[in-house]
Amino acid sequence: MASPQIRRAAVLSLVLAASTLTACSGGTAGEQKAVSADDLVSSLPAAKGPVDRIVWNLTEGEPDTLDPANAATTASGQVVRNLCDSLLTTDAKFNLKPNLASYEQVTPTKLVFTIRQGTKFWDGTTVTAEDVAFSLRRAADPSKITSFLFANVDSIKATDADKVTVTFKRADEMFTSEMANMVVIEKVFAEKAGDKLGTPTGGLMCSGPFKLDKWTSGDSITMSRNDAYWNTARRPFAKSVRFTFVTDATSLTQSLNASEIDGAYELSAASLPALQKSRKGRLVFGPSPQSANIYVARPDGVMADDDLRAALQRMIDRTALAKAVYHGAATPMFTVTAPASWPVGQRAVYAKAYKSYETSRSYDMAAAKKLVEKSSYKGQEIVLAIQAGDDAQSRIAQLVQQQGRQVGLKIRIQSMQPLVFTQAGYDASKRQGIDLMLGTNFSAAPDPLETIGFLYLPKQVYNYVGYEDPQVTTLFDEARGTFDGARRAATVIEMQSVFEKANTVIPLVSTNTATFLNNRLTGAVTSFAYWSMPQMAYVGAAKK
Image (cartoon, rainbow, N blue to C red; front, side):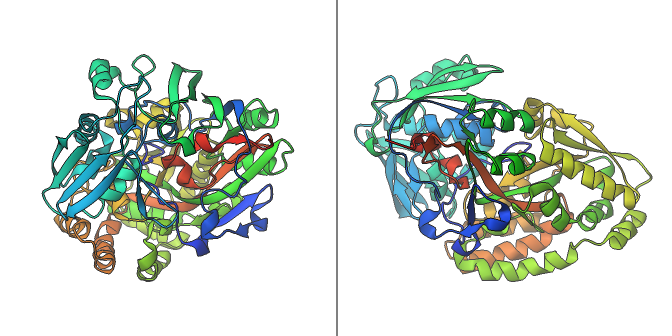
């Protein structure tokens, strides 16, 4: 989940449910066409040849860090995936495959990684088991966002020159698949860099297809092709890539149409109509497990009232929001876990449980007003934080403000600069005086436990309200410890019936990934799969 756009770092599945996926190239949402499972990674043709340079925008703004263990936003994670290799990877059928390492699940509580021979860091040194063990132990540190994924780990040890053994206190069905997004850094470099690792002055040392050249704070990040990359099939087409940090939708649209910037992911909904008409490039809608939500930002204050939080669930017209703000590139959502995160084998079971929330959280202003009247609310100001320059967030916030006024709520919209807004996603000191945050979340694997764990387990970084329920924690551990999908689904649904009553998150819509690519280029990954892949390595010339 990553920060305040509350996004989370984890492995992305390349397949959702094929029947639910659509793609759109250069047309309107109404002209969308279905894509097959073979098309999920990209609906664009593969690159035809090399290019000297690509200028790509990070729509969320400048990353707050490139430290892999804390690279939890779409901006930071996107850059890191080009620089650093993950241990494992996934194919389009959810199958785990070797990448920097292969693996053997020796027993439910013992996992062994074998490091691929011939892999080297950018400085020419060999990737060793010690580097891998160090990277995993570092990611498991409680101070890191990724630590939640290691909750059941007992030990991580380099047990041979090319082997790392992970032992568990209890079986963990989540852990191995999460390794498809757990990257490796050089131990010696990281220890020397210390707290500066992943900063403009500290840098990184990884083994990925691109090398970090320069991070000019406030301006750009530049990386160049790693011509010695071990995976010859994935050596980049581009000699260099420059990431820019334009967050204003109008400015970005102008730069894309002027070919000053070649492309971008996660385009603002406000820019879609103009970019659909562009003659300089193509706009593509791809499958995504992302969602837009309102988060209760702190445990105290006016939003501590249960009835007031429940009122927000009823007063928001999600259907109108999807149409008016997202131009059809979104669908109403009624639970914390997006339908796209449901495992394919158990979709019918999850869908049946989901219907009750569609009913109980349907748009009903009369019901919302009654809940407000029943609550302890006495006209206090409710502060709703959004990211400055994000037109979609601004329009959503205005809609919420207007509908809140109709039921007697006084909501004030507070814009925060992108970097501060990002930091507020994981730093409570940046949320002082804020009652609600408008942001986005993604479940990167087809497993609702990712979202649930980050939001509802005690002391987790995104558990803003300090939620703690022994029944939820027990059921979570039970679900995480079983490899039986049907049994796990039943446990998750039971757990959901408990934590959803707290209304600490008000789900709004499930969104598509919107990508723009200049006509001179092709090959871009157009589903949200881009986030857990070296996505810029796929982009190259559209013509030979």
